[in-house]
Structures are given as structure tokens and as C-alpha cells.
Image (cartoon, rainbow, N blue to C red; front, side, top):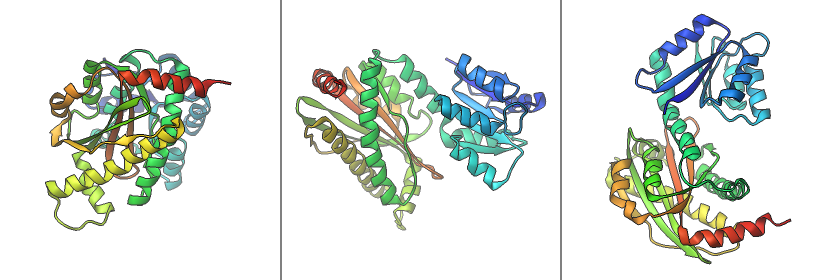
Length: 334
């Protein structure tokens, strides 16, 4: 399925130049908006996955578009493309929700670097998966699962931010009920173009059980080591220690946060290394017999201004769904 891209610029030349600069190997469907008003209209009608947005436009400028998107709850991956290179302009659009800023004229290489750096292709794929995979979860129940996870992942993000002295970008969790074949697809969508290291850790308590699966892009290790002031040579042993440190923080904090909100205690098993420096598809193939039909909650952590990408998936067993539904029903009572 093609990725839906919207390019908003009042200049026909700029729109065409940007469209021609997009990667040739990216399966996309491109639409155009001629100003901010048209942009909001098209976002509402076509629901694009990616928006490339100019700042200086008549009727409604780019800043106003970003503010309107925020007010209307329109969550679109947005990259600003503008000739306004003031530092304040860059900072302002990021504060309004854009994920990056590209100076005009935009070269194909610069655009490719931005797309690669933010994993825009993969994020769009995961967003489609969240809408297309698995059994539909009742909207009220999904909202509860997401809010419980929001609180727990915020606590985990805080611990990680304090450890690395960084700003941790927190996503909206994806919640789905997946068959094992669909889970296979979801895991493969995380990053099919880079090697990954993974850890899983089982948990059980109060009629609920499952596994927490953490996948860390191998390109993240160098920056994590630097942030943790490690000056030695990176090898498999050191990277495994870093992987375990990150997984202990994130998995432990997530499970603690959820257990407190659900009023149940989780016992955690020993972490198991799924593999190091392997394609996600290989990790899935070697371990998918562990996972059956499951409630899956996916959290994709990022570190601002650093090439660090980490995916955490909570995989609850099918037998756990009854207890979780009971807990959710109690939370939804007036």
C-alpha cells in the first residue's frame, strides 16, 4: 500500500521540485495543497500520513497550519520546508509539533537524510498497521489501555532521560489484538533496513501474563555509550550490557507503572536475549513460536537530537484478556 504524502506550498515550482526530490524507491501517493487553508481541508478529507509544509503562504501560513492541526487533533508527521532560516523559526515549528525543518532549496540528499533520520517510512508503515492489523478493540477500551500505558511509559521515559541526560520523545502507544502472523508483520515493520538486538522478559501476576519485548537498533549503541560516558571499545559484550541496562530500565518501569494502576503485582522472569546484530525478520523467525494470539501494545521511544531508536512491545497472552477486560470495565465505571 502506498504512503500518502501531502506537499503544501503556495509556489507551484516549489511543490514540483519537492515532489521530484522524494526518494525514487519510496512507494508514495503525492497530493498538493496550494495554501494553509487548502492544507487543512485536504488533511481532513484525505488523511495523509506525511506532510511537507511551507511557512510563508497567503491566507494561512505554516505556523497557523501547525497550530490548527494541534487544536483539531490532526496528528500528521510534519516536516517544514522553508526559506526562513532564522533559528527562532526552526525552534518555533518544532514546538508546534513539526518533527524537523529543511531549508529551501531542498536537495534530494538532504531530504533523504531527514526521512532516514526520523524513520518516516517506517513510522508511516506502523501507523497503517495499527489501523489494518488485528481484531478491532473497543474505542473506550483502547483509550483505557493507551492511557494506562501513557502513564507507565512516561515514568520509564523519565528514568531513561535522567540516566542519559536527554529529552525522550514519547509516542502514542499502538494497541491491537494480533494473531501470530500479524505480530510477525508488525515486528518486521519496525525496521527492515537495519540490524537489531533484542531482549524479552516474561511477567505474570493476578491472572495476567505475557512478555515484554525490547528491540534496539544497532546504530543506537554508539550514541548510548557516549551518553553514558563509556570511552572503551564497543564489542558484543559491552553492547549486550548496554542493551540489558536499557531493557531493565524501560521494562521494569513500564511493568511497575501498569501494575500500580491495575492494582496487581507482576513477577518478572529472567531476561532472555533474542539475538544480537540481526535483521528483525531473523529475530521474529527464531522466536515467533513463543508468541500466539495476543494483546500487543507497542511503544517506540526516540531520543531528541540523537540517532537512538528503541521499540518496546508488551505482549499479553490470550488468557489474560478476560482479566484485563474486567480491570478495564472497573476503571470505566462511573
